[in-house]
Length: 362
Ligand code: NAD
Ligand code: IPM
Ligand code: MN
Image (cartoon, rainbow, N blue to C red; front, side, top):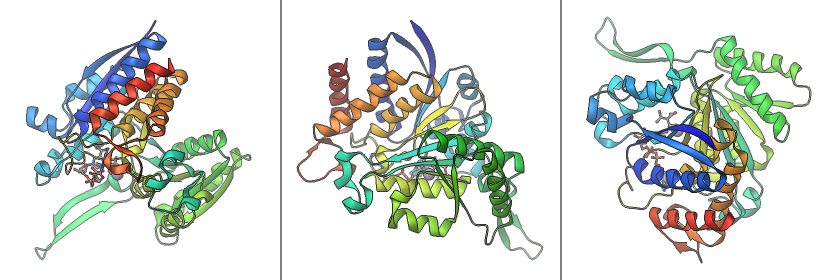
């Protein structure tokens, strides 16, 4: 029997509701395939602020470092929005990514046939969409120095962030992207703003140079404004997209909506070594928290990515993904993916249906 130590970070808002279902599904699939998960829960975000005053307690980071993989739900909420930045939930999440050096964030946006009618785009535009956004996660606008709100000599406040990338930072995310494209459709689109930003010029030069090592990958470049438009105009032109931290944040939410709902989209945050963090693309959804309304499927699919990319257990990953398709096939829908003729369920009911599916797959 294979044993794994998993850190669970439920965080805030809908986090505890959806992570409970992902944990249950891991236990179920684990029992079927002789995998034992030792779950260790730790605090992050607003929950950690309430308990310790710190959005990322040292103990949490250590627990994550000592585990085989980390399953994170989401952080943030109105209650903490006015705290100083270093004490905000989001700072805890950024600290986790930086602390574990998770520079590569894989965000797949795949349209499931059952959800075509939940997309805000026309069927013929989204049918068959299968995109992987490779987002740089530990650099760019989120981390560049200097940053802060400073007062000028004339007493005027000036907000500052810096977008910076070094060559090695671009190269390592670039290589992940080329290798990802190699395993997929063999096409990579690098998204930048090289017509205006120097940092993007360096990005484009490096990505172009790397292309020589990957002759089997067809590389193209788009400016980010055009890329955003193209994603909505004709999403099927994309296979793999590589982009910087901030552009990737925005483009992955756009890609998410093509597939019906952000409540469906998982992600994997990976470093060169050590445990990865697996989390939905969506946030803590404070508007629906605590009401049993959340879609738990992005969290379950994040657990599947954990099995696939973090623990090298593709069979278990396949089962979770099959079970998700199964419940959708049966017509179960949370509010965010509802369409005519389907059965509206809450988060827990969706979880129950999922466990039944998993049992029937075994
Ligand atoms: P959000 O993704 O939390 O919510 C956007 C909209 O999508 C809301 O209407 C919400 O109800 C809906 N939604 C999101 N996930 C859903 C799900 N699983 N099922 C059904 N509906 C879902 O984004 P926001 O409202 O801009 O941010 C809320 C908080 O979350 C903020 O504090 C933000 O900083 C934080 N956030 C955290 C993460 C993360 O932890 N990775 C990601 C994004 C935002
Ligand atoms: C995400 C979120 C985070 C980000 C926030 C909450 C820090 O939006 O994971 O997409 O901007 O990276
Ligand atoms: Mn985001």
